[in-house]
Image 1 (cartoon, rainbow, N blue to C red):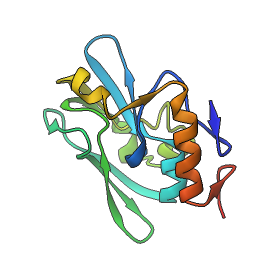
Image 2: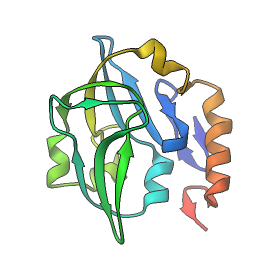
Image 3: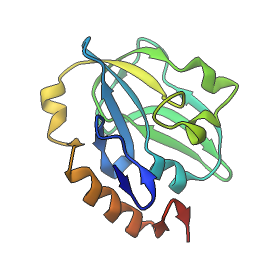
Image 4: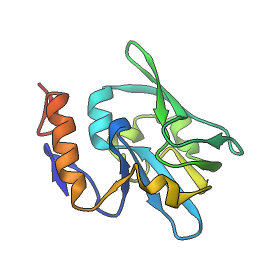
Length: 147
């Protein structure tokens, strides 16, 4: 799926207000990361530090910290659970978040605590397009570029 010229894979679950995604892995975990729109909104990411393995995370609360050109920002988790893995590649190559936000740029893997409770805040499938188009409009992002 594409909105504002940006890709939004249809197999993901999105916490739209925070521009993060969760890919359900089928083993009780979810891989999480920042959406393409979130990356465009943030600008250049110079450092990305996910929470450590074993950390408890809540939906809508911090799962990582990213350093931008002029600020440090907390990245919110789309799901609640326990961090079971982090993307070690980001320590040396935080630009992976920009280059491949849905692949090598993932942040962490979380063992899900209560997916059914989390689902009410997550968008999946067709509703994602309209929501992301609206978020892009609010941010004045058109076709993947800041205007």
